[in-house]
Length: 223
Image (cartoon, rainbow, N blue to C red; front, side, top):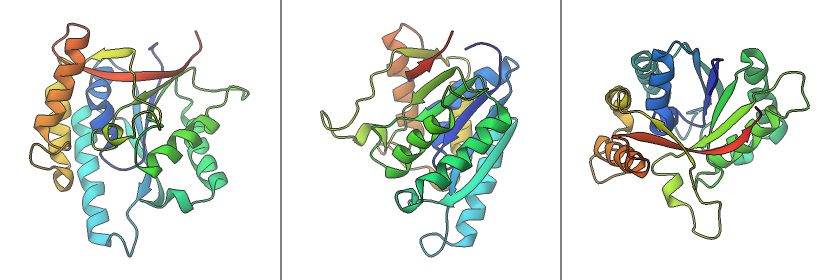
């Protein structure tokens, strides 16, 4: 993945940990400058102010555990990106991409069932188009338990990974970070449980004979 800055784009707080927490921790430990962009925030009447502030505080603690350099909140309405003008979402993400000039961008998968995830994927690609003077040469899509696994087989893009990042040394950091998102943790067998995250990491690792991995679908790589 080179040596440059890494940007993880998350539709909602905790998507970044679910999809790429182990990778983020590994890259940060290796000295990489890891940033997170959380595209949405909870807004009334769907979410109350106290709940939104609680999640932001949880994100701050989780990111500290992973070694994240900074988190950028765009503040678009959670569960409302399908009603948000595409030009506004494109511009919001583009500002972050152009400001940070990351070498690697990690995105939600376009086949995720949540419309916010689909919108973030598309707008992130718009923001990362290679006709610009500076653009991210590496773009990969991560999987988010409770979103990626609920897509419709043969109707939406399937998550078919071919890049596996060994997180054997950072799986516990990922699980710790997820636990710090206390309001988002569920009991097994819910997908958003520590047990399910560990099981997925074990499965992805076994695919390439490692103890634990996170898997990614390559979107674009300019070498």
